[in-house]
Length: 364
Ligand code: SF4
Image 1 (cartoon, helix red, strand yellow):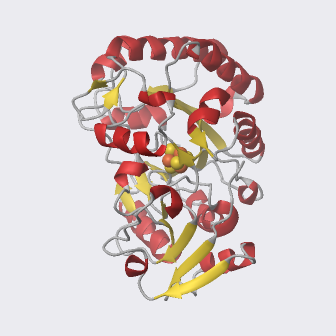
Image 2 (spheres, rainbow, N blue to C red; image 1 turned 120 degrees about the vertical axis):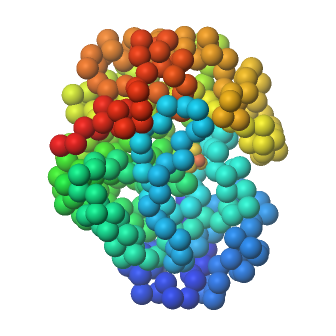
């Protein structure tokens, strides 16, 4: 994986006592550290505006997070939601996929940040989990960052994972396109942690998932965490349609299920390429040669562009049939899709988000 260390670490004063600061100092001995009173001011004004999304990835900011850490996944209007919660322990990502929605979502706040107040994160989650012991929470950390790409430097996941491993009513999902799993291997997840990989054929990785781990590296990392006792998830998302996509996706699935014991897979999700007119403008500026700009898409009621519905249904049905052949009872769900598409692919649609959440991750 071509995950280069940051060129500089900028620390907001008050974060020097954080274990994340200690980890950064230890793991980045040759990198310049500087200190500022306020990262928003240091990074160009309100909210930390950075003029160039790409160059913002080269500097890592360490600061206290001042808002709430735990949030309900916003999902997408009118689409079937899977009742997912997210913890944001960092913002932005050192990798650079051409379709990444963060290019639009974080356009005015694109600094690569990791948050130093880990104790506040644990306290907040603990209060919620204790208050609702009868509720089973599925919590992800990869909404506005990659869960593991910064782990070799920050040690964030290693710091918080032992807390989650002890909780009776939570499943923590670490979603990644990296292979940065070393710091997880000697921890005991106690059945409470799923490491989820976003998967695409190597051709798509080469073309549009810049600086991420290769397919082989992702699968090797998945094999290692599975052997260390972690549950696994795979997200074949975003699926890309191009001449010959069937052969590439079929080969990827065969390679995956040849290496991974599907009986230990917690879930598999499917989703097609989604973007917006605004994101496409950014993609045209940053990745003008990407083939993703040429495919035909339609505007859906949630404001997102997707392939037209019959093509999506055909792609999902094809993937489901290959997955079922290799892994007959693995749970498969669609990410951000309409009830009509669910019904055409599976013959049913979950009646509510709670039902889908319970199907994906029943309390155990
Ligand atoms: S790995 Fe995920 S968060 Fe990082 S650039 Fe790619 S899509 Fe965005």
